[in-house]
Image 1 (cartoon, rainbow, N blue to C red):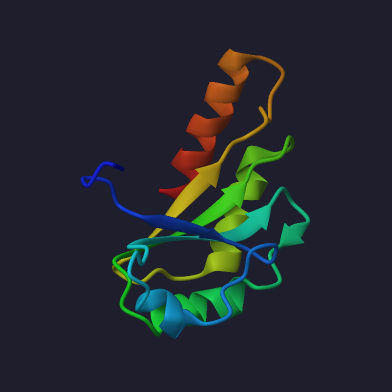
Image 2: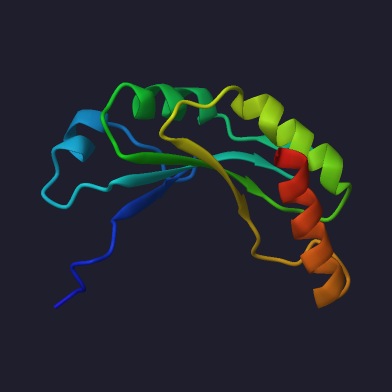
Length: 122
């Protein structure tokens, strides 16, 4: 039996779009957290970002998390671009970093990169 004290979440992007927000909202195991891909590196903006943001905002989910998929390169430029593409947040929305591959050459540099990214968001 799965644990009952965990929030259900859904990761959406142009690869895994939401086609029917109403059905998702009324599903027996509906997610309370929706992760929405926004940007990746310096060149990619998810083509479904605006559509997904509208779908999220039009439905009463608890929390929306816009995420940036980190790539190697200038950390400050990536953070600024991410914030620019997402725009102003609603009270139930947050920003997040998706770090699957180190954007730096060592573990210590990767931690410095992540720290610099988050400081730029503040």
